[in-house]
Image (cartoon, rainbow, N blue to C red; front, top):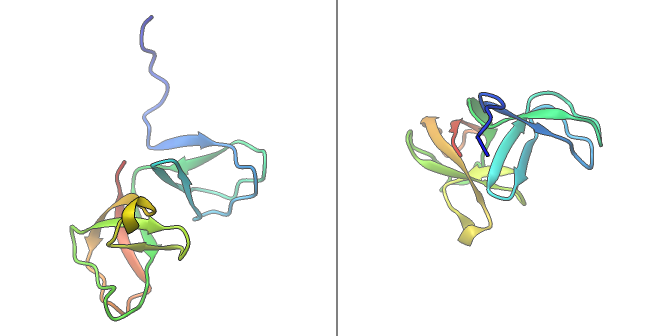
Length: 112
């Protein structure tokens, strides 16, 4: 059997069980994507799995993130964090612009 090219891979098809809003982070196993547009429940849409996005982050005194730092998606808190949470948090990518502890967002380059 031969391998067949399907797409470039910057986005992947996704059909959610429940409606997803544009900008929502979607985790499928170890694959983390961002909804490009609103996707109705049961309808085919797309998740970006590459690119640079502003993600929400915690604003606690210990939440500063340096450029180049690896970050993980904390689904319970709906923020990126520097910690893997013992495997509970899924790897998202690397910080491309440092964010101070009091910053509400951090710019991250998605990596899979």
